[in-house]
Image 1: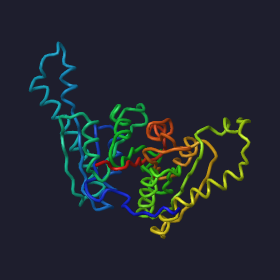
Image 2: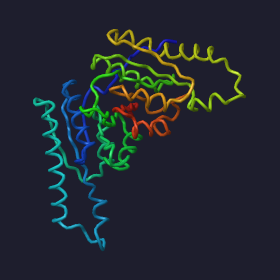
Image 3: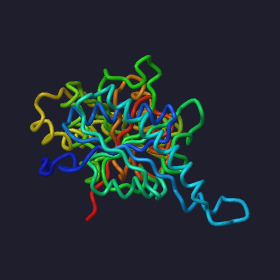
Image 4: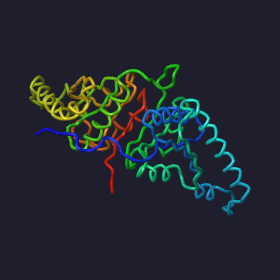
Length: 307
């Protein structure tokens, strides 16, 4: 059965929305988001959630938060947003930019925006801890968002975020991976780069797989079968994007290891929100969690839009 693309790979309306908090990670995210918004001719919305509810509960003696405290918090938030807007202008001077301070938590703010945004972007500050950018917001938004969500990580190069290398997509053969394939082809076409399609049928690591004596499986036959699944998934999309050169990679095990290895030279990793086989439970499992925390390049997580 052929799988032909009959829906757009991205939401057709909305801005690129980026959450900021003033860290180096959020600055990288702003620059990546500004460049992406400019290339796709979309406005950029820079947002900062001050989370008044949590702030109020943290005040000593549990008194009502004073106007002076609120003013100081808002002043800090405005400074963060102004700095982010300057960074975005450096990347794309003609870009339409809006900024917003919200009383909501960053988590609720970004998840709500993900319902209508073309893309939501967050940053990670690698050298100050896994959750230095927005704390638990990182995994909450990638887990519960409604549209494409990008976690921007430094590439370790002078440019911060790599602009060369392939787009790499993780494919498991389930219908939910169609959104990831669509986004990956679109990104590869826009970036004028090759697409590497990675398919792993099992989430065991290679050593564990090799030790499974109970499995009397011919590795060559299995690889042939899995290659056929991968080719079937890609067929319609390759017709739609004839400009994108595709390299297919089939691995018997180790999706986390393989995708992390590819992220060293990729400019973007794309994965679906849910799956089966080697990418089973990708969004809530160890593979996705590891990628958004440790990949060497930005990671785009696709979600199926819910009504």
